[in-house]
Image (cartoon, rainbow, N blue to C red; front, side):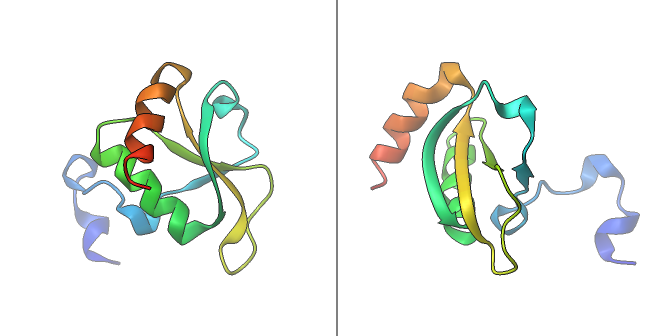
Length: 94
């Protein structure tokens, strides 16, 4: 049992960039727009965290499970009405 297991859920910190989930074949994100594609999970999580830190809701999705090294076709998605804002934010990071 880890330290986080006994803490009430409301006191637990949000997952950091190293724990951001990848939603595999999840239709609930089909209406969201892709702002970037990545080949590795570590890079995708870092860019995802940048959007979250800017207050932009974002999710990482994939059509197929990633390999054991965290490689695959990973999409960074945002709600359709936030695409322009997310694109502007990420373009200024390039």
